[in-house]
Length: 177
Image (cartoon, rainbow, N blue to C red; front, side, top):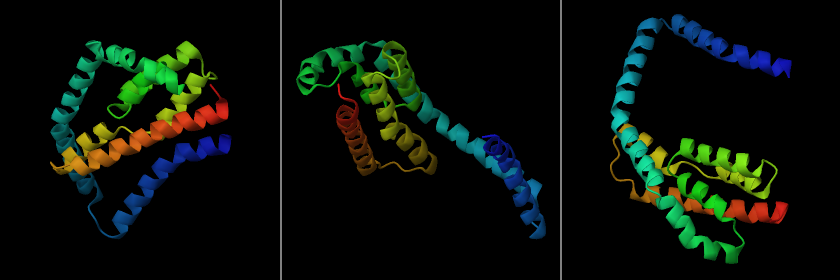
């Protein structure tokens, strides 16, 4: 374990050193190139702020309005018939929107039910089997200026749905309910 820790401590400075040496050998002005890259990164970060702000406001309104609790109460009878714990629904609903919000929901589920509980295992599996589709589309498509993202949105949300269903099926099969 200490070998891995040592390697992980030194790998980034080593890679930076290799890049600087390669740039010097090729007679590239490395410092000026670094500064130009930094300027471009700052411009990109500023251009992404409106997209991130819109996403954060939408998530906050959704959580604070009580819409999540109403949705869970609405579909709870169906979930009971299917044998799916309704406590997992907020995670399934939030995960495609925000990774941070989903991590907060997963943390709450693990605190409440425990990491070795079925819900804890299901939440962990679902967290790793899905992605933050809306966040990814907003940030990455916004960064390169893509306005039409309908097909990517459909495929991303379908992949999230399949990840959620697969998580439920696999956890139910392996861990039981």
